Image 1: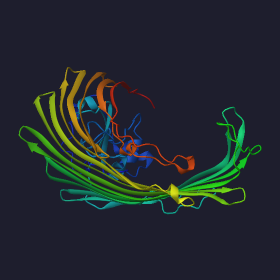
Image 2: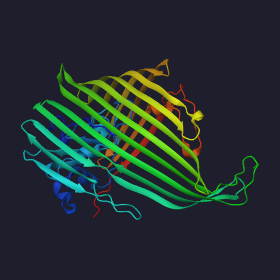
Image 3: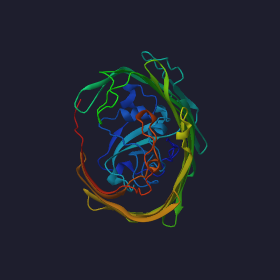
Image 4: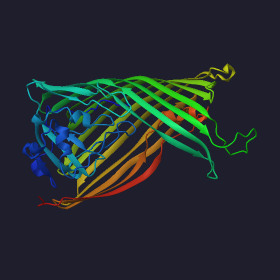
Length: 490
């Protein structure tokens, strides 16, 4: 599932750190990238030597930290697997510079290590780009409808970017397979043919509003569809003679052929936004997000004997509706120079509605009928985070918080309270070396799909019991990072 990213476009850099006061910083001007002929900011970021970009935020809720990409000093506040999409909508001509920063110099809770800050100014003129990625593969029909179109610009205090595209592809494989018993004896030879075809039209709009130098708002909307078809074919040849009463655990193989087809027609949409403004002696940021996905699946399995007589025809239908709604507020202030605080509160509601049906076309007495299950979670959490400059070379950050969760599955409700937080320390002995450590109490993301029964027709698995007792993974996690820049190279 993909979602819009809730961070600002390049309309304002009012909240960026003062680059002259940042230690361990490297700056790359547009002239550095000229030799690579970049089309957008993402092309430029990928050309910065030594950069390791982390993806979007897949934590429970919005969490802390996220992608290590800033835009005009602004962190990502939404959710998504790929923050690069929005960076890729910034034309290279709008990029002022790209900075490599150390997270210890930024008051961003949970962010450690190297950070990329893209400094850009939106052009008043409408600009755009297009990309066409036709695909040819051996033994496949060509894919001509893969590509995208991007436009961006600025009018007054409103910056905008939009993109439409189609993430289509055609994949597959073919070749021989050999199946063996536990003792190594071959019982069946197979010829495999597999195909995957996807069509994925999608569109998104991103707006950034800067009514004043100390205020900024973002609104992001996206909508996408996906039609996915998978087909697997096996031509089986049994090895050895047929045994009427085989020994348990020993296969003798069956000649014939089998076909498995799976189709999915899903659509998904999301909207998120945030607004940051001065409040009391600090700054207040309000964030909202909603994502929804509708995914119907159908799987059909056919089994034929060596004379091409139909032995089995089964079908499994499944429809999933899932969504996530989040509201969050962050209040940040500085008590003294080098001492920053942030208090955040977040509430979230997640749900998954699931309906399934197993159909045996040749033996209707095996039909399961329609089964349904709903999984939902209401959650609230709060954090207090403090960042302190311990000395010219040492910076520390600590966060303490907890979450309350109410999980409902199959008519059963359970509640949990879990502590969360982290401590991190960064040491910068010189402008080319950074050592950072982090020790954290983590609560992992909960996959609602794990609560559901599973049917795998091609593996003869008709049911795996629903698990009502699942809880998120909880762990202690630590890391040590060393970043060293070697200067003077050519």
